[in-house]
Length: 141
Image (cartoon, rainbow, N blue to C red; front, side, top):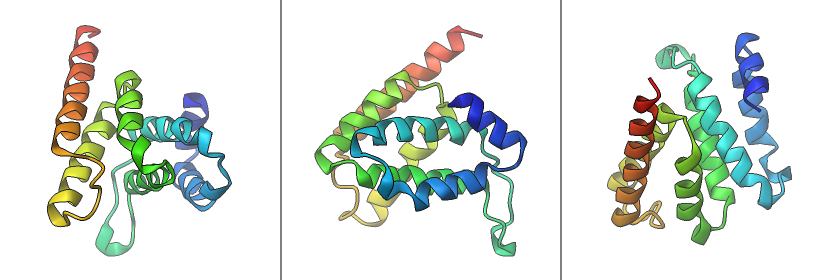
């Protein structure tokens, strides 16, 4: 999957591919959503964050974030936290994991009725996983 994503990035087709994933997400069997979520984390690392929002140029990275949340919404509520923890534990997509976690926190602060499945304790555990992944990555340098 990383090879495909890398090729799409080189061809400047990543944004279109992510939009297609979002559009066709209902066709993805529920048991494959975990894999799609993991692939989108990788896509987040490859996606450009360049763009001018006020000029209507949405960065690729924003499309990836929206797609991640769309996939998360397709996962049964009671499995979302464990899915994120499990996938984060094996992912090397540090920037995307950090950003995704911060977005969940931001959404919860702005509206306490959203993302209630992510309790404060769960977010602390997810942050600890991300920190652990960062440390492991630093050892490899």
